Length: 119
Image (tube, rainbow, N blue to C red; front, side, top):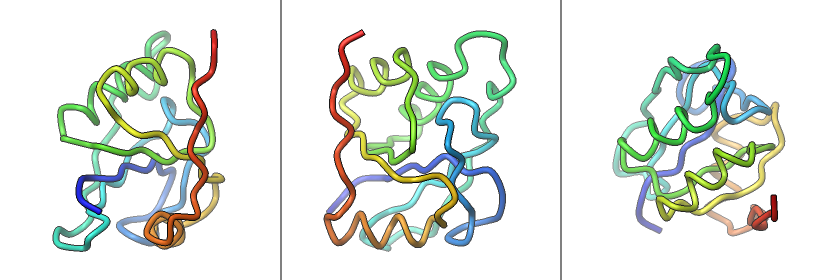
């Protein structure tokens, strides 16, 4: 499993950070290497409070940092389209779990893929 997995988080640091249910409005993202060769990185989501376009801004941030997969509880339609256009795989993960819990499920292959929605 190579690449970078990003998770929207609301609080905490590193693997103990808790997932935020809202992708574009999360205050930050933790980016992890599923293979464990790089330490987790925290990216501040400067667009979380934007009146419009928070999801697209968050997607652009993650694409700039080479993210190849994202796990979140919800994706807005524009964020989903931007991530898919960038070749990012989308997975579902309930808000409130820790980064470590989601990473364990990702490594085990038990996270459900986020199905493409028709808008």
